[in-house]
Length: 140
Image (cartoon, rainbow, N blue to C red; front, side):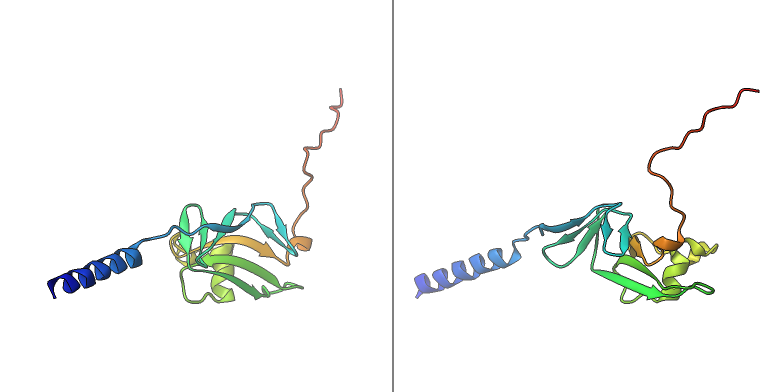
């Protein structure tokens, strides 16, 4: 009787140790900064992890949201790609936190959300050459 109780306790202990073992999630995909993903651009390198979370700048975020809408007076929609631990982010919250608000209370704390990409607005943004253009100096 004592032997069977000991065996049961050992099995329970082993099962508990196995259940408590923490496996580090692995990287499934890396999205590189300056890498285009279809019609959008990635400006912060981030990783998709095997447990369904995302990592950027050493922080883990529960989800990746794509928030799309149209700014006042714009002729086309814009999409923000955001890694977040928040439940939901509206387009108004996104464009304000994306740098278009002068009120710093509109910005997200780094542990809550980070902008990693933008889409739909490239054709309206200035296109800068990848190499610096130089022109000969005129001698007067």
